[in-house]
Length: 151
Image (cartoon, rainbow, N blue to C red; front, side, top):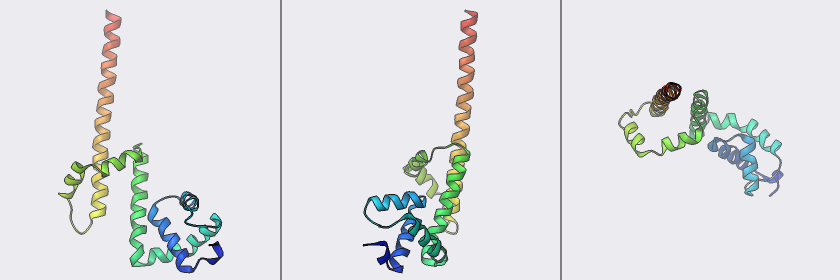
């Protein structure tokens, strides 16, 4: 199917799939093209995004996807600022212990906000623990140096 033969609904579906993926546009497009799911040029897809993204964001049925993407992006930015690798965060989300602990704190009105705050608190505690261990490690190294110089 050539890019000229995509219907408006198909174009919207491609844009929505990109929005769901939380991937950069170019990366999503190239992966979809390699998989044979879409044809044409990236510039055409980029034009579809510019044309339909606002409409999809405004639609109550699809707007939540964008809100979730923004929260994901905000969390990723926060994690980058504290130098936590995103691949490690996925393992936090898969931890049954953390999920159980989090579920005990849930309130129905603002679950996503509380989950992000919960994860940020966990990350801050872990970073504080790492800092403490680094300090302890530095102290032990100094003790070794002192012992070697004195011995």
